[in-house]
Structure formats: C-alpha cells, structure tokens
Length: 260
Image (cartoon, one colour):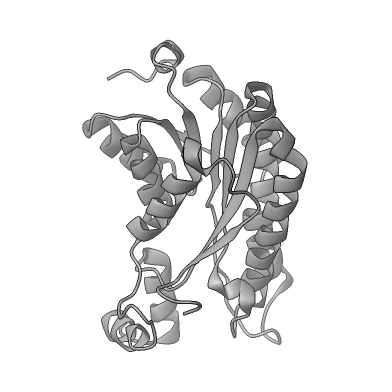
C-alpha cells in the first residue's frame, strides 16, 4: 500500500498525527486510529521504532508513515507537520503523547532534569499544536488530544513530570476556549498505572520486580488490574468521533477508578 497524499485525499480520510508513537500508549493510539479509518503519521524521535509502528499499521491494511522528529525543536516540529500534510493531506487530528521521565526528589533534581521533561511534554505539545491547528481551523473541524497523567495531582519524586502533566491540562482547557468556534475540540486523557516500557523502566529504577509491582498496585485499583495501552487508545478514539463534537476542554482520568 502506498502512502501518497493523493491516495489519502481521494478517500477523504482524516489525517492524524500521534507523537511519541513508536511504542506504548502512542503506538496503541496510532494503531487504533488507523483501525478507525484514519491515515496516521507516527511521529517519534526514534526513527527505527517509529517505522516499526507504521509498518505494523500498513501490514494490517491501514495507511501510515513514520516521521522522525524531536517535537521540542521548533524547526523539527514545523517540518514534521509540513511533511505529513505533503504526504497524507491536511491534519485534522493531533495526539500530543510524546513524553519522557527524569524522576528524582526535588533536592536531587537537576535543571536539565526539569528542562528536558517540560520541553518534551509542554513545549513539544505547544509547537505541534501551533503548527497543526492552522489546518484544523481552515477545515472547520479538528480534534486535539493531549496526554496528561494522574501524576498531575502530585506524585513523590516527579515534581517535573507532575508539573508538565498538570500544565497539559491547563493547555487543553485553553485550546478548547480558543479553538471551539472553529469546530476544533481539545481534550486530555490522564492515565493511571499503564503497563508500558516507561513504567517498567520506573520499576527498574526503584529496584523492584515489575510483575510483583503490578500485582501490588492492582490491589489498590478498583477494577482490580493495571491498565493497558489499548485502554487509553479507546478513549482517544472516542474523542475523535463526530459524535464527540460537544465534548471539549475535559480531562478524563483513565485509571481504573476515581484516581489510582
């Protein structure tokens, strides 16, 4: 299957960008949106891993391209959106999922730890949204989905990450206010404990067995299990629907309970 702009536009497919889509939650969202019939741009700083996600979508019969970009870099973010528009068509769905962690207690946290996390999460979301919203407002239709976290409510050892994820919520609500009159909605998803490589890395940093940690965590989750990337992808899919056009500026906690 080709990934030309003509092929995408001839079928009037929605074009979606998912950042940080090489693995984990981002990859699951990219796959789900492709299953929903969208042409998907897998944007990730890891070019090879991003290509694997895009190829998996292609092999499943979907339409996808991989775009290597550091979303925190203004030139790279603008160029990524330009390439997607050139190859797939105007962007009307943007999922700002890209993120990193650099956990530490406040007295041990370096300026680089703080800046790197805030840059990828907040600066990256800002740059990608600024570039993509022009196509949404022109189309008079758009969906922006930002990934927050239960850590936005506070989490020991994550002052940088918590600040970034809380910032994503304020960013989302303001986008909803500014872009609603153009038919563009903006919503946020705040995952709880999700079984991903990132949470596995956290377990390794803490020196605990990941499987044992999941069992322990699940005891405090009302639904009795930890989350999977597909749980988040399902909510992203909902936000992208035509029927969700009256839902904007909301933060949905996907955590197996009110907060876990």
